[in-house]
Amino acid sequence: MRLEISGVSRRYGRTPALENVSLSLFPGEILAVLGDSGCGKSTLLRLVAGLETPDAGEIHIDGRRVAGRGGSEPPDTRGVGLMFQDYALFPHLTVLANVRFGLNHLSSRQARAVALERLAEVGLAGREESYPATLSGGEAQRVALARALAPRPRVLLLDEPFSNLDAGTRERVRADTLAVLRQDGISAILVTHDAAEAVEFADRIALMRKGRLIQCDTAEALYRAPVSPFAARALGDVVTVAGIAAGGRLTTPLGTIPLPSSAPDGAVQVCLRPEAIRIVRRGEGVPGQVLRRSFAGASSRIDIEVPGLDAPLRLTAAQDAITGDSVELGLVEGGILVFPESERA
Ligand code: ADP
Image (tube, rainbow, N blue to C red; front, top):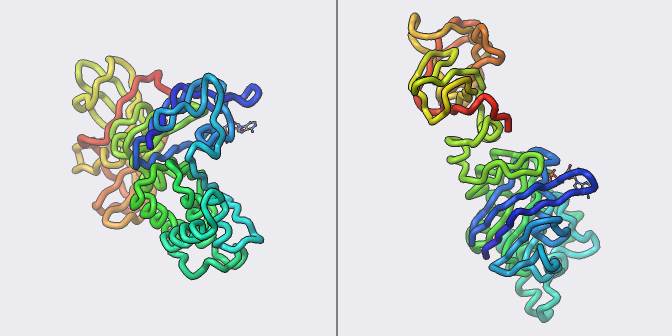
């Protein structure tokens, strides 16, 4: 399955929900659409599913135009499966009947066999005669997954499907869902506002903001080479300080270093990942005071106030530092991201 979204826009009255979004989904790929509430994620899924039509642009599935110039193909022939947050199981139907729901095109015997197979795949063999009210949140979500996968969709669309589950269940159901998708090579789009979930679940992440696609790449590329300060913040901690780029050197409040990436000479924004900042020996850095230190496994997360900076600097360090300590800070290579002063998005 290959999905191609080309220049798609959609407005509701005067609200532009999506503006000129282009994205591809490759066979077997899992793509996360990441962004804050209201940025257009669900609208994008509804357009792919065929629940709505774009005002501009086109959508192709396996080379076939399903939306755009010349009309829209209805949802039920697109080969798209849907799984939403409020999984909407039919309460008066058994688990088995819920999963069989989309299998009307099969004989009764075949439909039963497929439904049982899907239930076994999501770890619910033996629960087929239960009713939804007797299921835990995690089990209900597994039934919803089995139901969405039963008709063998070419692409599965997941809209915040795990957000109603408690933390422990969420991790388990998420891992199991991912395993099922991988095992069957199903392409999927996961909508989420949770960056950690996007990183864990997806091959690539499409970062959105206010109806626009900001960047679409692997988590690692988004972390290491974000296109803007906004994109830098989306995937991990950064502290932004002002800097000056000139003659291949970058001057920051923490010292002058070789310019880590190309930037025109002049005022720049410097986004510092925690790994870019180190506590250095006395007399070698810029003085600051430890505001707080929080445990983060093998290392600690340390926030340090530096006179003259708007926000505390955050670093991760194995070094011991105690709240109130005076320390000196310097920069190390890696995790220093430079953007033009004018770059806001
Ligand atoms: P997200 O899923 O990222 O939270 P949505 O796609 O639901 O965002 O919404 C994008 C924008 O479009 C929001 O400003 C939202 O208020 C608006 N919107 C979404 N659906 C409708 C609708 N049916 N009618 C009017 N406005 C809508």
